[in-house]
Image 1 (cartoon, one colour):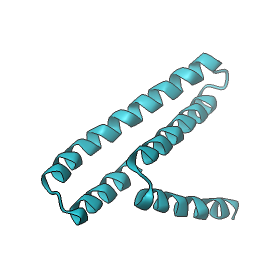
Image 2 (cartoon, helix red, strand yellow; image 1 turned 135 degrees about the vertical axis):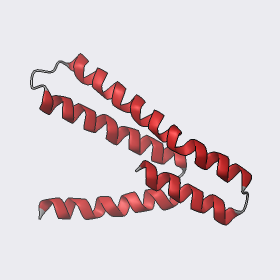
Image 3 (cartoon, helix red, strand yellow; image 1 turned 30 degrees about the vertical axis):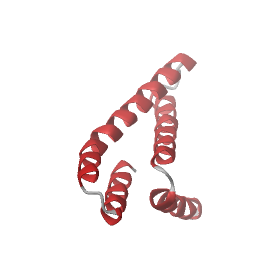
Image 4 (cartoon, one colour; image 1 turned 90 degrees about the vertical axis):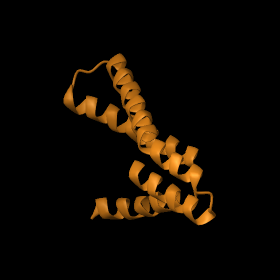
Length: 101
């Protein structure tokens, strides 16, 4: 029950983030979550992990996330650049952000 109570507001925040936040804000949130997940994972996988291990894992999680975002985004940016109607740009933005999250 605690997970549901915590999860429902987070789902609402993610939907609002996708629909209304600028892309850079979405990217910052996604990278921050990836860094936190990486630190949590290294703490669970290697109980004696040092601070430098955690920092290194966080760095590579952030780097991996940014690379994946731009690999996913590149075709969408190209398509959105050729189709300049507002509706298609909004649809493209929603598709990109939902794929990223």
